[in-house]
Length: 389
Image (tube, rainbow, N blue to C red; front, top):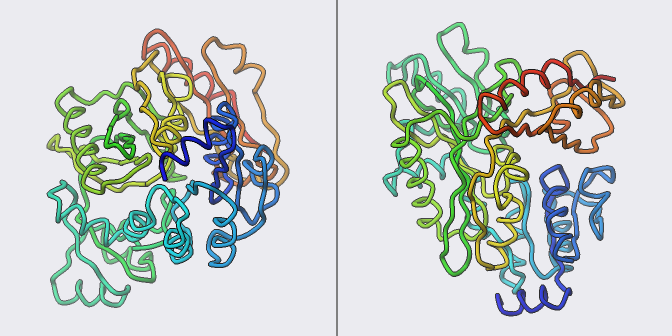
């Protein structure tokens, strides 16, 4: 099958399907267009960012069996930009010979945080201690009988993303914040830093990891505010995180791109938080700052091509452009011209016509010969660029 896919690419006759048409799909299409790949997007929103530049836009839901199944029948190779997809449809497509990468069974594992945590335990991957609970009532029972103590972190097993589906319970006063549904409870880790490693693997087993990045979160939005590369972790911690990333993708025998988020705790230990089998917000800087972007690397891996260099060209800071609080409606960007006048500032607008508080509307990568210079410029951009109505 790989030979057939490669031959289709060589003949400019490859049909690539991407489930969901957000900004990740858009940036993946931008890379695919360089290789004359015919792209198909499935999304229920006809105004989705990727739909405007795809060769073919198909309206439909990534959660509906029939929509995903019929979409997959139109392409040679199917991939995705989100985790919440109807896996049963992907399984049926795979059984009928459609190539799907990453594999549907890997997606099914990662969709369920309980199965994710089991995988870490079974493969000796360091992660926060956890317990599974059927619902919020079982959590309350565990508190009352003394088997669960404050503080703890509740994570819904399915459906969470971008900080949603997570609740930090510090005391009895926070019990009203318990989420409903099957959950895992983790011991609350004293976090010193949050870092990420993106790793790729192709069908021949070649593995390459990108440099470790450090993520700084907006406490109100619970989203990444900025990303820094290279990170400030020690060389030993960076090596540890990269080794873990390589071990995970090899243990999964996964083909594609895998983003792994880590905590560095107060003792300096590196532990896995969670992972995503796709291109990721923590890799946007790679478009300008790394020899091979995460989007090109994903294509290289699923097409079983040689993986590209992950060498850092210049230090970089990436800022998420989020919708301003109190603004919901037609999108208006403020400060674009001022920011574009700063050397090394690269602005990416996702094309979302409606802004909402903390919605991801774009990102900015700031390059400089030194990390200190990039950070200083990032502060200037942060103070000048905003999204309002």
